[in-house]
Length: 259
Image 1 (cartoon, one colour):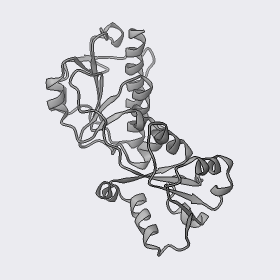
Image 2 (tube, rainbow, N blue to C red):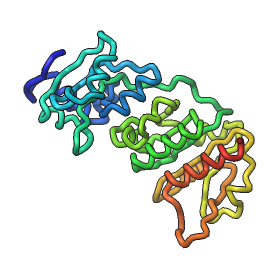
Image 3 (cartoon, helix red, strand yellow):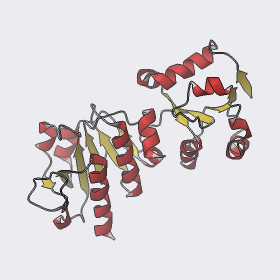
Image 4 (cartoon, helix red, strand yellow):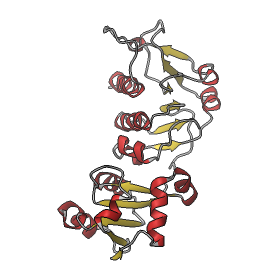
């Protein structure tokens, strides 16, 4: 183990840039995983961190001590004071451990016949993360995100998805009109004004669920190649559902219909 004792340490400055800048994360190809849950989810799918950062108070927590004992002897461990660690933490109450990992890449190429979740311009990272969590839970592996979506691997999205990222093939910056135009299943979006109900949709064949931004909906170019629109029946007085809630309803209706 090594220790970083000051903010002027070059390695700490580099970690601070990773913490603060999405551009730096993309440039370096590295991410920070804050907390045992994300580190364990990464490890469960074969991931090995390049480095573990641990606070002084984290060292005495049993679950962190066990994590350090079980990790590969080749994984560097860096100890930080609680104050320095707090400068890298993503939450007000620091977790005590952060993993530095190589930015994961999709395992599989884009498949035009696979069940898919397509996200068009969704800006809120919490909503993106919640949709990724639902997609993984519902058994959808392929997720395409347009270039104007919130970053799939941002710290806020990672926290909201609770480890789902490592079960998914995430294709950021995707050309959704091109993909949907060539898609060999049915591409379906939701609309509160659509005449057809979600519950009357045939979901036996591959489906690409298309979800748009919270305020603007789908881009015209995406809507033009989305073959079906359905509404989620809402007997209450609400005009619409949050996009993450709507996605969960649609994805688990797909699961229910295929049981």
